Length: 176
Image (tube, rainbow, N blue to C red; front, side, top):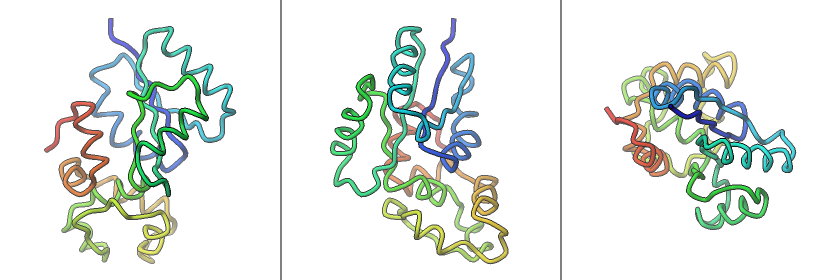
């Protein structure tokens, strides 16, 4: 019997990314893959949920941006304090923020067509950097993100972002 996978993410931008890019890549390994935004859920409820997932013998990935912490270890310590039912082996830290993963997967020719600067590495890209580069042709930030996801390349993303590369290798995702 296959298991269920729960991917706990911070918010809407993460839901879009994991729903469009990651869920299809992991779907064949599970009976179901569900994405749950935890930032708006009370801490106690998240802890109870993590405990129940473990007791039911299902899998979960807990995703968090590193934000302005100095290291992955520091960010994990904060998460251990906040969520006492969390297992460190299930935590994935996005460096710096999810927007860096979006940009990492944008092929250079598509970026050029959109008039966006291409990066050799996106590890230091912040939400503010991302917002500043949204071309005027897009009605909203969300439209821009959806457009990037249409052309997203797992291979480019793994080459341009260390934490995305770690993620694809950790979960055995084929990089093309």
